[in-house]
Image 1 (cartoon, helix red, strand yellow):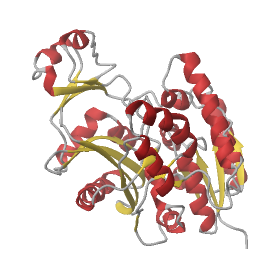
Image 2 (cartoon, helix red, strand yellow; image 1 turned 90 degrees about the horizontal axis):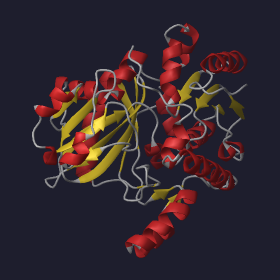
Image 3 (cartoon, helix red, strand yellow; image 1 turned 180 degrees about the vertical axis):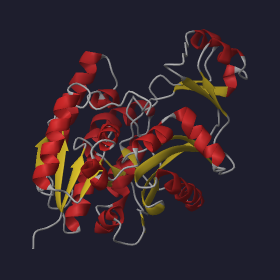
Length: 386
């Protein structure tokens, strides 16, 4: 019997590789695709194939042609986005019924509602979810009416990895802020605490997969490369929040960043309606694949030790540990934790990931960007409204 096919896009992401491993373990032929070379994915034994398509940002018409060809040839049961290309796929699905039937993602309008920091604040308010007081800024007059800037955090309506975020800015930095109706910002009441995140998946408005995680190891642009489960109370609170948001998202993957205050209360900050590093905490469990398909019970990840991206943990983590006097913590993580790129019997992706990291690092250096921004420039969604 021929194995059912899944097509996982955004193959550049380590999360995509772990999704492919989970689907392969569940008996699926997992195909990966991206507009980047993705040496990591090509070095893995898990995918049944690794394919290329054009950049949806640079060549949108060619992207659609390539994707239609892939869907026609592979006839996947599911198309599972792993990166920012989810917005481009959901946009295509509005006029492509066959893709809509296969795409594991919220519809385009819901994606926009979740990704917009301004609209997500409205979602949280409507569902009674804990979120710091948030204001939408469309012009200079909106800045005048705010509380003191020293109590606030300012963010573009659409941004990732903390790009351009102003935390409790001084007057000089705030004076440079120029929100407009076409490029809105949000101001959010500052909450001191510990950053946490969760990754979740849902089918028909029901939560089917969940993992909560935190990290103190981050690249300069804000992207984490090591992950561990938070305390039980925090996980329980985030699980309750995720179950409510599953009813909003409907289907697909979504993730949220939160801050846990000194009293242990979790406050939502923003939502990323796509796969995130929380996928790694499932340890390639086939139960995750079944939860995404919708033919298995809900699954919750609960690893006892650190999970890390080995190339980044060495390339960025070791220098950071030396600078910050955290070498002991770095060594403990290396010894007690587990790499998520080099899996047992599938170690070659480590070399591929190193090659990908060096290529994206060079791109970031030439463009004057963070590594995280360089990794997503050719798939980034620009925030177009429905």
